Length: 226
Image (cartoon, rainbow, N blue to C red; front, side, top):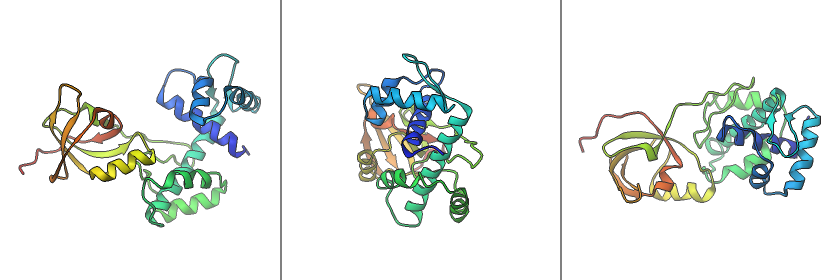
């Protein structure tokens, strides 16, 4: 059974490999994400390699073995199920759940997680729109577009957020942007690619290109007549 720290490393490596498919993950990137020294990362990678959880060669990138990937997805599954529980059953907001779920994800009771999954009616997505892996490690990734790719006149539904920091989620709340919101692009400013949008056929707002690159949308909706 991996330690808390080992689970955190495996999860971080998995997420980095998904963000940059086709390439191994560098020691420096892991150190940056986990906010630790590169020397500490090297020591942990060596240990995880000896346990058969990743492929590691000094001065080269790392990749997870089949078992390492399974453990990473198990940790991610627990984290995202706890986030759903915290939001739906305990009334947490989506910007409050990450740190709490970081602690709870290390509870390694398969029976507890099966019952939690059933209690929540087997959710497929967490409160930020990320897919929840199944118990056997399968993960279905919906096909979304970045909001930044939308052009004037297009409409879509807000489905997920790329940036899950508390500050960003609080900003979205102020803008009235939540998952499931209907987005209509009224104008795309050529100068900086900021978007003037209408949210849920009501409020108009302007969002920057940086914000739109951190929002995922889906669906080509019928234009509004209002």
